[in-house]
Image (cartoon, rainbow, N blue to C red; front, side, top):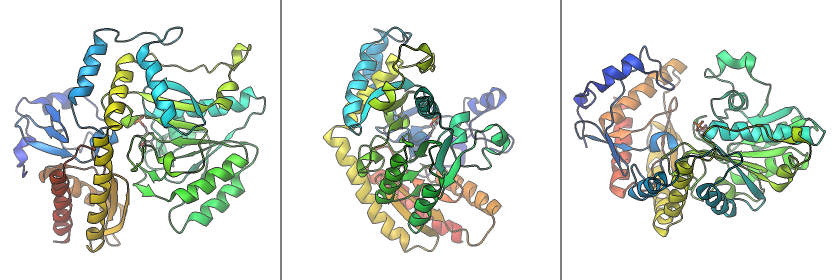
Length: 436
Ligand SMILES: *Cc1c(COP(=O)(O)O)cnc(C)c1O
C-alpha cells in the first residue's frame, strides 16, 4: 500500500480550488499542506482521485464505526428521504425520532429516562450544562459551579469550551468562559489526589461534575480505571452534584463495551452522545437525563421550560442513520469485531512496550495509544514529531492524526486483520524512522 507523493497533487485541481475559498477546522491555513481530495470511501478505506487508498485508522475524527458509505445505512437514509426529510420538532414528531429514543434508552444506564436531540457533540454538552444549571434554578436552589477534569475536552462551543481544560486552543477566549474548577485526571498513581481534590471542591454550590468516562480523547487519549471513576461519581452525587458523562467519543462500542458507563457501578445523571451515534454518517447529538431532572422542568410555570432547540433538532434522516447504525452495532458480527480489535491491540501493545521509541502504551477496547518518545526535547519539538509522524504514516497509506506526541489507533470496527497488520507495521516503521 505504498503511495507516492503525487496522489496529493490532485488532478482535478480540487485542492487549489479549496484553498481559494475554504477555511478548514483546526488548521493553520498559512502553513498546512494543501488538503488531500477524497473521492470515495468504502469500508475502512478512503480513496483519492488516483485510486490510491488510505486506511482510516482514526475513523475520520472518531465518528465512523461501520466503515464508509455503508450500503445498509445508505439504503435506509435513501428510503427515509423519499418519505420525510425534515420537520420542525417543536409541536411535531416523527417515527425515526421516537423509535431511536425507544431503542436508545434501554441500552443506557437504567436511570436515563428522556432523550433531547441536538446536532453534534458540543451541542449535546451545551444542552447537558443548561439542563444542569436550570435544574437547580427551577428547584429554587441555584448552583453556579462546575467541576471538570484537567485536560478535559467537551467541544468547541462556549459552554463546552468552558468546561474543557484550559490550553492554547482556549487561550483567546478565557476571559469569556465561565469559571470551572478542575481536579487531576485520576490516572494510575493520581487516584488519591483526584479524590481529595474533589472532596475539597464539593459544596452545595456545585451544579455538576462532568467527565469523559475512562478515556479523555482530545486531551491525549488519557486513560483511567472504572473503579476510581465510580468513587469520584459516588462522592459527587452524595454531595448533590449532577454527574454528566460525556460519552461523545466513548459511546457505541469504543471502550470494548457498548458505553463506557457499562464499566461502572455508579450511574451518571446526564449522558451526552454523538460521533458514532449515526455510525459517523450524519450530524446528530443526544443528551439523555434522569426522570428527576426532567421533572424539575415540568410545571405550569412557563419559565421552567428548557428554552433550547436547533433548526435541525431530531432530523429524520440523521435519526434513521442512527437506527441503521444501531442495527449494525448490535449484530453478532460487529460485537465480535470489537472484541477482535481489542485482542489484536493487546498483542501489539505488548510488542510496542519492548520498543524504545514508544512510552506509556495504553489501551481501552478498540483504542490503542502511546507516547512517541521525544527524549527531553521541548514542546515545539513535539510538534515537529507530530507533523513528521502524520506525514510519514500518510506515505505508508495510513491516516492517523497524532495529538501532539500521542499516537493512537481508533479504527472503524470493520477494519480487517490485514488492515490492522498494515497499521501496526506502519507504526513500527515510524518508530524505526524516528530513531534514524
Ligand atoms: C468530539 C467531542 C466532543 C465534541 O463533539 P463535536 O461533534 O465535535 O462538537 C465533545 N466531547 C467529547 C468527549 C468529544 O470527543
